[in-house]
Length: 230
Ligand code: DC
Image (cartoon, rainbow, N blue to C red; front, top):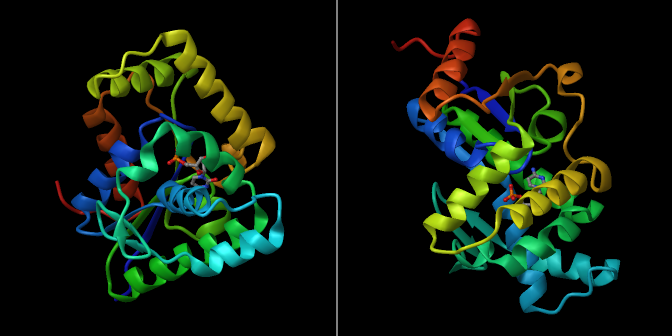
């Protein structure tokens, strides 16, 4: 029997990266962080000084990029880049890379292949990003739009940074979250602003704990016959 698919989209720091792998684990399925794939292309471009305004150079770079994904590691042309793709430099470069049509075409096609391979093996596929339910797997069995208030998301981001012993001031983080939203929704237009019109189950987890968020998703999966454990 074919496996099913769950798409989790939403703005930056809404909790997708925490929630999606937990859902995949509960389903004994496969989790895919699509943002990390854009980060791999950004890292390759940075290391090879690719001129992102030159489409020939971008196409050449794409043909040289081999991204290999395991559940918690990313390999770029055979090298483990799991940590390298999370630096501030990459944070700044990746929106530009994610805005290039050719890059999106190539990565979306790879993401669809991973989804197909996974469901052909009878496993559940849980992917998170911005355009999973609108472009990558529009026929996903469950489409979740995970969101939270701007200030709550900025506070979460601040906490993550503090845990890594980085002291950053709240106003700066808030500004970067506002910029990210602008890039995702207005510049790159990868994230819809009207999720209700795309059949998403909209989950605002501003005032929900991680466990409460997971439980809400499990309820939705049960409604659709995708989860039968207690
Ligand atoms: O979720 P993240 O911060 O790791 O995403 C990195 C970048 O990639 C960010 O600019 C949004 C973009 N992205 C995208 O355009 N489409 C996706 N499916 C996932 C991420």
